[in-house]
Amino acid sequence: MSKACSMRAIVLAREAYREYDQRITVLTQEYGKQVYIAKGVKKITSKNSGALEPCSVVDIHTIQGKESKYATSVHLIEVFFVLRQDMHALLCAQHIAQTMCRVLAVGEKDVRVYALFFDWLSAVNSGSLLLVHCVEYFYISFLEVLGYSLQDIIAFGSAVSKGDTTWYYYSFADGRVYTKEVAPNQERGCVRVSGACIAALQEASLGVSVKIRISVQQEVREFLHAALEYYTEKPQVHWHMIAHVGQSA
View 1 (cartoon, rainbow, N blue to C red):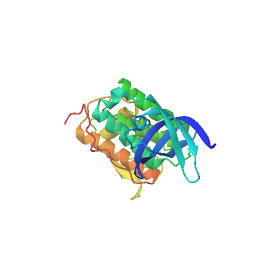
View 2: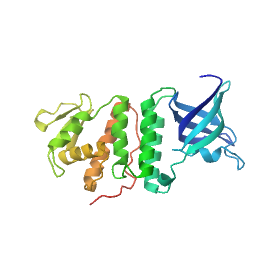
View 3: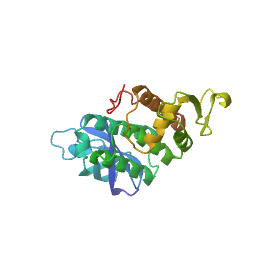
View 4: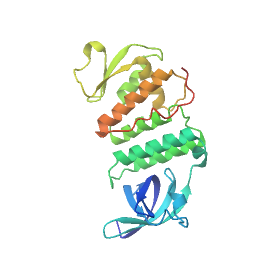
């Protein structure tokens, strides 16, 4: 990266750094995740502060200092206004942004990750992606982009019904679904999952909005949370506290 640089980015996080400064984490197409120091943004007179809200798209101008990289100016491109008016949608977006902060390495470029998050934000903002499965839809796609496909269990969803109470076993190690009789003897990396959950996973992978039991929705979230932790080898914050809409008891 050159001494001075300009790029388009999605703001992932901002955190306190010294009295008036903040550390800003962004996701870019050209350079992957980057972290910059934004000087003076906690001052009332700062021109950059309003443009650095997480999940905003900005044009950011930066310069390399002796020890840190600094954001010198920021121009707001897209704030996703409709998304921000819905507390549930905003919490979902912030959770995803925080997950990417933990998972992605600084400087690891992958234009697919940027495109995935930008398209997800745009779809939620426009209403073309409904909120019932929006977080699950993203994480299934995110794992796919990272190289950890769940296609075997998703494809298996066409063979089971939404009311299937049969227990199956999924191995994260080899990506296969097993019945109880042939389940691999693996304490870690093998999870029990119901047929109803597998059917819901298939619908979530398509962004389809359907009413499912809360217990099944919770099972889907538990499964994907386990998948994220297994494949990224990092602890992840659960999103069970985010209230989901359009569910039946």
